Structure formats: C-alpha cells, structure tokens
Length: 71
Image 1 (cartoon, rainbow, N blue to C red):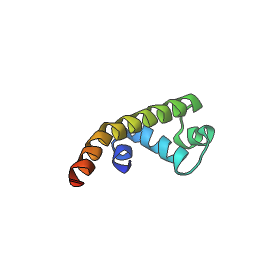
Image 2 (spheres, rainbow, N blue to C red):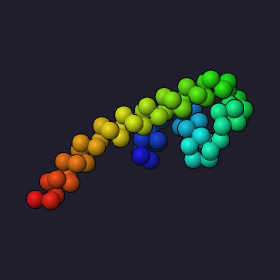
Image 3 (cartoon, rainbow, N blue to C red):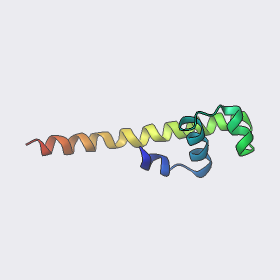
C-alpha cells in the first residue's frame, strides 16, 4: 500500500494523504493546496483508483508466492 501511495503524482498523493490519513474535508484540502474543491475530489478519486489497481495487480503474485511456499 505504501509503495502504491509513493507512486502517485505529487498533488494526488498530497490530497489523498490529507484526506485519508489526516481526515481533512475536501474544502479544507482545497484551501491548503490552493485548488478548487472539485479538483481535490478528482485527485482523491484518481489516487484511490490508482492505489486499488496497484494493489490488485500484485495480489495474484503474492498469493502464488504463499501457495508455493506452503509446498
């Protein structure tokens, strides 16, 4: 998960972290980042989609490793 977050574009990463880790609302993030609320909303949506894609693309590899290690 941390690697997925590190790979986000800087603005998306900052908006996502402020929202998810610090619990800030879109309007608070918009003011802090000097962006519109809608831009913040989109950044967080894009970041979440990217994180989900990153994690799901690696799940099958991790499962395969776990299965192979159990033999």
